[in-house]
Amino acid sequence: MQKGGSFLTEQVTADAIFTPEDFTEEHEMIAEMTSEFVQKKVLPHLAEMENHQFTITKQLMEEAGELGLLSSDIPEPYGGLGLDKISTAIISEKMAVAGGFSVTHGAHIGIGSLPIVLFGNKKQKEKYLPDLAVGKKIASYALTEPSAGSDALSIKTTAVLNKEGTHYSLTGEKQWITNSGIADIFIVYAKVNTEHFTAFIVEKDFPGISIGKEENKLGIKSSSTCAVRFDQVEVPVENVLGEIGKGHLIALNILNIGRYKLGLGAIGASKEALKKTIAYTDKRVQFSVPLSHFPLTLEKYATMASYIYAAESTVYRTAGLLSTAMDEVDADIEWTIMAKIINEYVIECSLNKIFASEVLDMVVDECVQLHGGNGFMEDFDIARMYRDSRINRIFEGTNEINRLLIPPTLAKKSVKGEIPLLALAKMTEKEMLSFLPEEPDDKLLSQEKMLLSNTRKISYLLFGMMLKKYKEKLEEQQEIMVNLANIFNAVFAMDSCILRTEKAMGKNEQEEKQKILYTEIYCQEAFQQVITEAIDTLAYMLSGDELRLALSVLKKYTRYTPKPIIARKREAAKHLLTAGEYLG
Image (tube, rainbow, N blue to C red; front, top):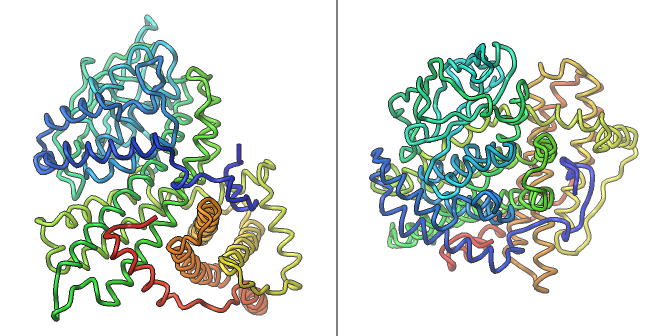
């Protein structure tokens, strides 16, 4: 089992990571079944669900349950399929094409059901999971409050134990709760005696629960989102999830899984947007030429596909890590042990969410642009996809919050000796003046490996300087923490691209030209952004001679001969146009 965050400090071989090219026949069958369900069952009713006809949603959820699309994470003893984490990842990606319905599905199988799957006791699992597995009951996750969004631990919902010691009385209000209008079971967070943050399983039929009106949202309109109020709701003590005062362990680790799954959904939606746009631009004629033949159109195709490839590589790499860590774990393992396993990959999950959601936003924006005026019309799917995309950078923890989590988490892991990041920072600082830039050889991906190696060194230098300068006041330096998080993401994505491409070449004993093009394009563009982030960070932390010295060192790490990326993009785009869709 690899250590979380070790992508920064260790260079693993291609065989050590999971990639989409490693899908088995069973995985491919699951992908095909999910896609068929979305195309034949969900999309024909999407307009009705966009108008809040949620009886259709509930019917479709039951149909999904019959196919096993709700139970992949639920162990067999509790009515589920107990599939590997790769299978559940594939379902999440393929379901993303279903617009807001995918949010309904994702909230149910993810943050709604997983708290019971991963942290419930045997009786709780036996009582609730069989119905959740088949869609007979729908799950919802109630954490956010009017005054507690990103600061989730500041919730005001309270839970008071009665004199008999049999029930907790819950009082408070939750806001923007996905699935709330159709849910039967809520995972609710409250503070016992206004102090101890605790998770509860709450049934819709418990007296005192009221559901607000459907919110008028910008996007994901085909999912239900309402406020939920609890007025002295009596919840049996046996419905406490985990332990009193340890609800934060459940909340934060469920959000870790939610962030990773959000990344999967963003990949699926990005691929669909690109596919629709290639088809549109190939038919749309201007100046007597299809839009798909213009160089700028081709440039956009290639840029979108290269970034999708990078994000897809990181997300499925994380899927592999979680699969290795969780697939063989006993279904009834002690819940705090499960929390530790999931928390191991908190950095990877946050990076998946950040990167994939921002790739999706870039993709749908470019796709609207390529649709021209039609992209602004609701008659075209791309308009809805543009609206639906925007929420991904907000929920499951904003991208800003996720970025700010990464440097302190890495610092803690370093101090604990889990990864040698601090040692590498000190070593790089000692060697920086004597460092001599290397020149890549003529082997495939040699330059990309050099860019990756130098990005790692830059991250070590900046990380060490930041900790030395700001120490315990790190939380006040949000701008440079964000810069560092972006550089760490570049390391993860560049490394994942290179390893995936190498693995594919070794597996197929051929050049894998399209993957090489994607890797060259992404790595060079990401490295240019790393340079900008590094200069910005150094200019903030240093001045005068110290800054000039640091910039001269940085120049040694950032010196390289650029490849002709315009030509690379033209070549990659031609293959995309021929295929009519994203090529992995």
